[in-house]
Image (tube, rainbow, N blue to C red; front, side, top):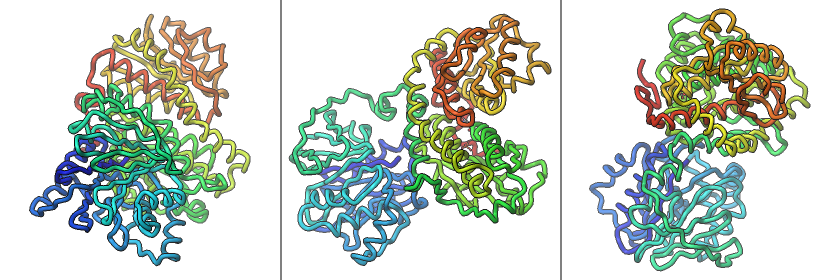
Length: 609
Ligand code: AGP
């Protein structure tokens, strides 16, 4: 998610904008830049890397301007680079823009601008299109050009623009990405969210979808797309800076759990073309390639590894290619059987996990084709892969991975369906059925999150236990491992996951009265077997919390509590059954008063052995 800051007033905008951008650093970014009106021209300074680097670069320049816009970029289209950093500028240097979100039809717009206006594009980004579009439509007033431009743009975006010919004016527009306007004293602001402005003001306007903002030192005007003024209440902000960074959530982990419907929707829908067919941008696997592979390795660490466990089930079931899943720290040292007929899939949120990177290099050395599923654009794992399939989860700040996991799953489902469709191992009706199931997931995740209160109550009752077991069969066992990791890494409770069928081979010796067992029982075709396992542990007086599909009443007979998830096909249940487990881990850790976003001994990205 990118950050936007704009200032127009009577002081030098440079330091005010830079300071505002620094308040957005917590969101994660890979480059930064500013543009200011100065003596009838636009000054633009931008570069890859931290804001501190940008500050150093401009330290000796006496940049002065009382109106400007700034940006921190979280790359989605185009790797992190000085050129791809924002602000982007029109060919004649008259318009500068900063953008958050995506212009979905940017390829078409690039073609039109090139053919009809001779525009020469300099970057790989979708955002650059906006600068040229506003410029070619600018016939006098910037706000008119912006309104014309957004008629042509598709996607989810918020952007701000300044023109060298309209001093003191910032124009911004919002469509499905956050935008606010801030009321200062003799100055006014726009921003992508509150932390950027808190140092200067506490009165803001929340900008709604399809609204345009005209910001000058004297006033803020909010207009609809027909230029009718919009009456908007001033919002008095009482948040601390830290509250604002979490947008009111108590922890980043909870915020990111709640962001999953949006993250899943963004990761999924941008890969479906107008006919509802899967379009795997960044992946050039052909049928010939797939026929050539005789094995797939999925290699990762931690939560990413658990996503790989789910990936095995769905790729083998749908594409009928053998899949081996391994933790990177083991794979890299066991001289694995890999050759040019191996497809190696690396999964990594950060793209910087050393073990995963080393395993990828080992697989490449042995001739494998490397495809990676990564959240950070331009990260080491992404750069060293033959194909990259990005999760569009946005920055994940909490050490405990949640939205990265569910968007990794989405990518694996899309890859599995794509491969199965190419190989003809599934019917078209099944292809469409699974896609429809995936498209229904965001709303079902929202439904589960709306019931978080019942999980919070359960956590209050169980938070002081010293051991919790997670059990499941089939794809549920893969999710059991993830649920166990979530609980142990944020609450420090000793939790343990095991395939339910394995209990009788030793582990059931640990069952005592009141032992806590979280039993995932979502697989219709395995229900009877799983039900027997629940009976076994219940017979030892365990406290069983079952995760089951709505409508399954039988499970109540042998469960102390049941947490229901909305009904869905067996294949896609991991996207839903993991949500109660994430919430359970969060609320238990909160009851225990742990440092949830930064658990002891852990790092967000393990870049060491
Ligand atoms: C997950 O909650 C943990 N923070 C950790 O297991 C993490 O998934 C693992 O270190 C892999 O990180 P990556 O996805 O950035 O490679």
